[in-house]
Image 1 (tube, rainbow, N blue to C red):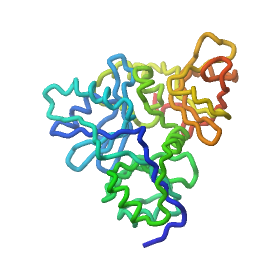
Image 2 (image 1 turned 180 degrees about the horizontal axis):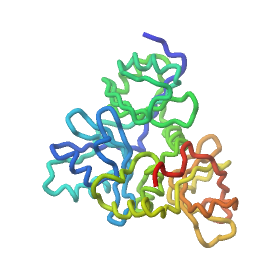
Image 3 (image 1 turned 90 degrees about the vertical axis):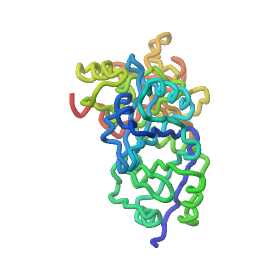
Image 4 (image 1 turned 90 degrees about the horizontal axis):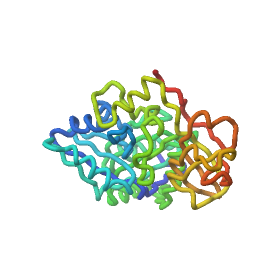
Length: 328
């Protein structure tokens, strides 16, 4: 077995929860409810998706992966899991599908250096090829399900790992001394922010359409599939070119624990009129990284501040993808 040259980080992610959809009508049911074309969700390919209200606003965002039996496993924010699944079940009716939280399976972040990818693949007996890996590539192993995640850091390979406690312990034992188990979810959240991946959480439910969260730019929305709740609103914004607000990334050179998802964003010249909201916030090492939504017209060089017109200033950071859709 090849030897690891660098540490392998296994990061506990209690902010994320796992759910499953099982039954003969799973694919048909989810196809009628989510923004994603379920034909793209397979045992070898994961995909992002959104669950919208009738008004087109996101009630939840998620990462989905299929199984060989047609079942689907998903990851969403833990603090909205109960309300999300309750609302989703309202539409089951006579469909042969059961949607439940997966309490034994947990979400972990797994980080390793790309030079150790071959050693890791041998350890897991997984077919992992290409550096960087193609995002959303899936491998099912004895240690759990590995989903390759986008990474904005050169040389960093990221996986979302869905596994039981027993599988995680076995994986760490198989890796050996280089394995580092960390209870530092903020590290994983910061990497998601830097990769331009925003999640809906309880504080931001029913606030944004899919395009505001850039879900369409991350292949989380199909504009060719059939109807789903909110589809008309999402499609109208796409085909009429009326997406005037997008998600952006910024850094704050301080830590303010009052800044949370849903906090208003202001221009200094308009202290009484918030122009946007924070979508994701994480503070590490004296800095705060955020994703926020705002209209394009607000990005005119005027300072943007979080919480109030006198709040900490946002230093704009480039997203790792274009804000222009691939097709109009």
